[in-house]
Image (cartoon, rainbow, N blue to C red; front, side, top):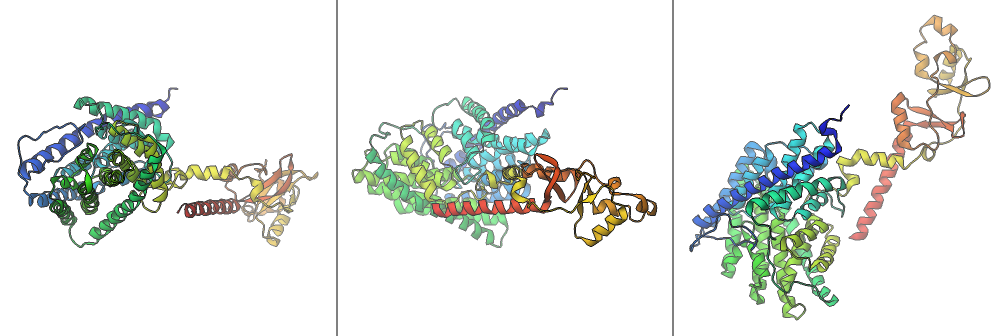
Length: 609
């Protein structure tokens, strides 16, 4: 008989390819929609022309000169957040926020299932939020769009939870890999973002590779642009070990920025959530504060580059990489943009707007890195201060999101250069280890062992590492002879507190098992009660376990016969009963072992702090 298509192992890879193709089209739709709104709202109406990375395709290029209309930079973000919150409230409340957490939670706790309408609602809401000036990134919406389609496909085909989870992760990888032109990093990101520890979800890696590669080809093929997102000039290299000093300074400077971002973001979310007003109005307030933050930074420095606080803000990073920001004025501008980006992103997303947190993390980390680079250049520690901007992007998100591996790869793919790989590894390692208390994605679980998605697997693995010999206590067992009359058996049961009795024959060999329940059903049948003996009512052949059996096998044996006790027989002599194993002994052993493992994990965490 042929295996059904959806049950074949290879079919999951084919479905991952389909997911990648649709996610690539979704990324295109999102890119065109948000770019069109930016052109009509921010450029034509408000007179603000956002700068972007040099490798970004200008879908709706602005022509001529534009006069800035400051009051519209207050109104437009408020309008975008209000519309986004209104649509999500009507159609899909889970589309609020940054999106990645929703996909992570669906993976761990919802069997990889996301409602089919969520990707569409998320895409529209995020395009409105970002297009009208709200501060955020594109990876959250695209990740949820791809994840949502993968989940939808799995559900429509009636696939298992595991398959739905895999397609969800593949969709997430596809969206991120396409929008950032980083297919390798997109696949690693989807496998790494699920956990706080430096751990990969290995079962999703290969499907994620396929989906991310296909999405990248669809997205870049349609745009006709295959280059990296950011362009680097000469001087981005690592030459000598002494250069690790400024990079260590950078890692230490990123730690308070990570703490500020994660703490302020969730404090803002709690504050907005506590306001007693309709959610769309709360979101409008958040958008208003976003615009006010951007204008405040702009008026402080008198430089329109400070308006990178709005929308995705990638332009400030390209300008830093091009060496346009120098001296102490450049340091001040970059630090103000970093602080303003934290506040604006917290107001936009925390109030109920819809956008991602990866993009702002790149801007914050790159700005702090650029500022540290300029200072270190003034001190004569580095030749090219912009190199620290690249590494700052890596280090900040690696510490905040607990994704050191994928972040290093993603930034190097976005910049098209691996020449700073070693300092990036150094800084990401330091920020990851030193920022364990700060967490950007709240739905991440610590590791696979603690994931609800893998809970059953680890119960089995834990039980398989323990044997019957570890938990049962050898003891003398009270037996009954096979010829004992039922009347005497009833008296024996009444005189003891035992419910189960091994039955032995005249030679003392173990031949069956007798339970109080077996006897009870014959008690009121007078004819049987007077004539029956143990051999008539015992269970034979007896179901037994041996000291060498693992506890998972023992538990399966319990479930197969619905008993609470099983006789333990010698491995070399099945006729010799050594004692009994109770079901509750297995439960106690498992609980004790789990507590030991958790205590060991807690001690390791305290040692890392």
